[in-house]
Amino acid sequence: MRQLLTGARIFTGETILDGHALLIGEGRILDILAPGRAAPAAETVRLEDGDLIAPGFIDIQVNGGGGVLFNGTPTAEGALAIAAAHRRFGTTAVLPTVITDTPECLQSAAEAAVAAVATPGGGVLGIHFEGPFIALERAGAHDRRFVRRPDEADLAFLGALPARMPGGRVLLTLAPECVEDEAICRLIAAGLILSVGHTMASAERVVEALDLGMRGVTHLFNAMPGIVNRQPGPAGAAMADGRPWCGLIVDGHHVHPLMLRAAVAARPRGRMMLVTDAMPPTGTDADSFLLNGRTIYRRDGKLVLADGTLAGADLDMAAAVRNVPALLGLPLEEGLRMASLYPAQFLGLEGERGRVAPGWRADLTLLGRDLTVRGTWVEGGWRAAG
Image 1 (cartoon, helix red, strand yellow):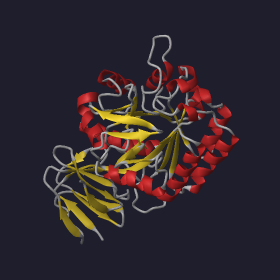
Image 2 (cartoon, helix red, strand yellow):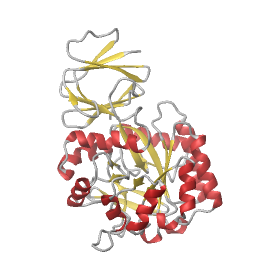
Image 3 (cartoon, one colour):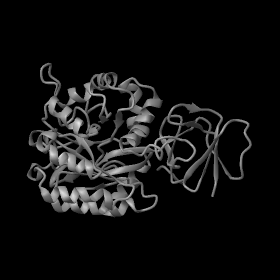
């Protein structure tokens, strides 16, 4: 069924259009109609004046939501429930994220992702393995018992996943000082996207990893050493090198706003992405949850262990977008790109997601004047928020 969406402004991924209408059908964007242009036969849906249609948000780092933790429920149902919980916040596609855990948990999560990706309209793009090949010194809330280096079985298991997940994406966060060059190249050749994170690597080692083909930096500044004049470390390398896409947790707690602004000023446009690092409380009123047997507390907009260590974020993507003008000093349009177009480009999905343009997927977010989410379309199917 074709629908003609009228009344709202449209953010195409580049500019905001007033007075235009959007034609969608069969899961795709069919056309953008300029004012005065004759409308084709379609069901007309009149939206509120002042509302904004934007590309659906894409979150590449989502540990949980709606009371579900992917590590705790590594099933297709768990992955789909997390995606559904985040949809009310404008996110139309997620990479459910499993952090450092037992080999059995990681394998179950992989099987879950294979099944969830094949579920039409489910909103699951694949899987993000955040660990276990990370630096013990920067494990953060990850369970240090399960931190390790990859062996042949790991490389074979991970390398086989992309081919089992047609159209899906496999993202792996690792510490490049803990993984040999040969293993990095093998995983990239198999189709995985690799990101630097939870690392003590020198700036020189990070540049070497980027030369090998690593594409991303996971939650820039977090779980890595700070920048020092003679030891710039991973964060310094990421700021100076224009190649990687960097994830930012823009909640006002994980990174000081001045550091966020410095990073944005240092890097080329298009290489900074919003991520939530969300946990099970997102979309609920829960004040705590369990992670590998440890209680995580929801306090003052943060998720912390008893000792105050940050353990994921109490953040949704719509809130992150709203934070961009105030905390990063960037216009709303750039915040919307950081939540949609840039993650799509990082994942190699440009041409499908991240813009409102004819032929692209009808995965859209509808924002009110206050930038709260009114609802979303996934493959053209509408769901109201709330």
